[in-house]
Length: 342
Picture 1 (cartoon, rainbow, N blue to C red):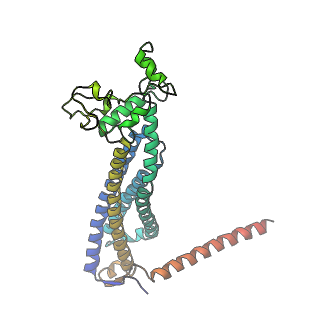
Picture 2 (cartoon, rainbow, N blue to C red):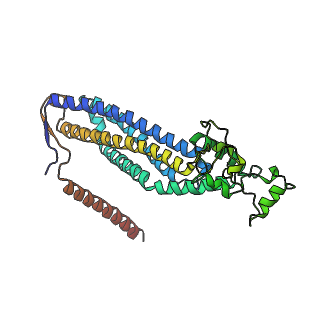
Picture 3 (cartoon, one colour):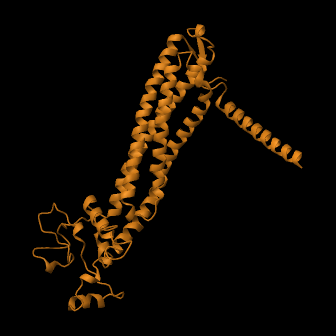
């Protein structure tokens, strides 16, 4: 059973070619936008790579970038084919390349689906990567003299100021680590000695956070030291007052940020997929309707176009049989060659 069989007059073929040309340039535009969004996500992941434990999430922008680039190239080709389709001196040269074009276009569609699935499936991996990376960033915050860790302080401070967050899960994460380097501690001070002795690991722990956790919108000077000590600050109640530091953790904030970018990428990829499907259908109808025309004298005659010569199931089975036959013939030739050699 022929799928989507349609009769085309010359005027209808002209309109189909014009529609294909328009869809092709829309496809180019969406492909470029998709490519740009993929690059933006890639750059953002790279910027914050120091607070990530792995690079698994880069599979999403890599797939989006590839799909966008391939889509833009396919759109340009489809636009050129649509221009040459009504010129019998130019169109025949495209015929050998149409089958590879359809194959690459279908692969491009699979890339779009893969990008959408990866955006959903890798969210958990991204969250775990941020959790471990931020935990290490807080832990190594004080190691400004250690090679490989000397930029962790700057990274964490910039991150917390830019994204208005504090710590990994919340600001209390800073209470559990020594984030002040020993070089800035006075070990002759009784307070320092007492704090170190009170900890089984010999660390200098405080109920305090770095300056980058301070909320500049608060009218009160930032209380970043002795946050839980009401008596250390005038007219202050830790339990009831609104803290003038960021209370939301950076993991939640960053995950929300990246999820938003991925959702935008997903919308662009979905739109590109729909446009690319429209281009494929239009080009297939144009191709099959033009196959019946052999010369310039037949250009204005009516012709029939279709999407598939047989049903979907029959087409798939036929394709599988041809593939099997091709595989058997190549295997047989290889076996015959070996037998002849022996």
